[in-house]
Length: 509
Image (cartoon, rainbow, N blue to C red; front, side):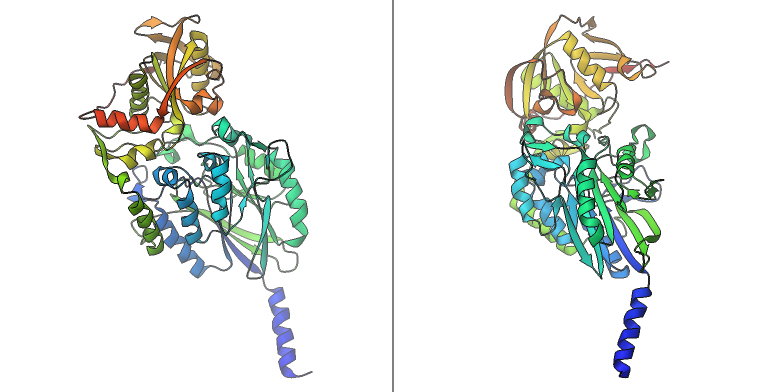
């Protein structure tokens, strides 16, 4: 045997006995949060986030770490540019960033099933949903799983959506699909993949809906758990890694399932952190020998924006110059809060009531996606604050139906209803569904037999976010898209004032 052949065999055997290292990067709930924001809740950063800045961070890691893969766990749509492009921009950015796979989130249905079905064809990477089928059939809406290979490492990746996320979609926008039990779908995909790959990565979009509040990361009252993901990791054997979305429940380090050993992680969403998980694999058994996981803040002051992403964003913005047109002017900045009365919430509820002439205005906190700036407000500011395409509608509701809606609101499961034309008193020391103390209009108690007109978005009107009393009410009329009505209101005002507070009073001892 010649020396060259001996040397080749020796090198091959040595390579087969060396540990394999794989680096997994992940995001979730980016939700078109493309620009850095002030990190007012953090002491060590001035500005955080930005999709171009995150891309630079991703590329730095790719240059320094071996066998790097990039995943997303859903919610890439929302915001003004997503709306105007039917979600095409989100996929275009992910193509440029080099994503390897994603799971479908509830926000991908903001424009309906047909638009998502079309736009996901734009993607060269797999867009996964193992438990979504066209209604009444076993025909999948999207691929359940895919196999990726890099540096001799093969990864089987699976995507699923949970039932909580389904309930955060306008019911008519997902009516064409059945979303089945996640564990059954995952179990089937794991059985298909396990013998052919080194790792199985599950991308989930489930758990409790995230609180949309800019500084939610620092507010302990708003912290969501990852119990649904822990339960799923324990229900199905063979999942090595689970990257979660929907709850924005940041995990500073991996949570290890005590029985299956599955590594579970999630970021805080909105592109403020990049998830990082590095694994060392045993070359003989393929088992994970060690892991190092963390959330890396996207330090916008340090990271230079990636020029390719900047150019792509500029191109799309230039195609819609009206986004930068002045829509109106506010007297001061207005912020969102998730489980408290807020300036933005009060303003939108007032606009609903004033525009329609209804007795009461309601808007759910989760639909308000951005704070409003002080001074000049652009069309983009309004569309980013309320990026959805549902209609403003008016219902005739009994006092009993209104009471049920407020009882649901005060569980804080989906944030508090922001209100106009009604005074609410509540006590959070009571059990969840007993917190409502009183409801009144102009100081007069609302009786269960009273009939009042209520203005709200059709997402709530169809029973979205668990509000089951609204679909039981009598629909009176619709007045076009919510965002269009808000834009008209801003245009009609010399200056938009900060609404008065004190509509919802806590009397907790």
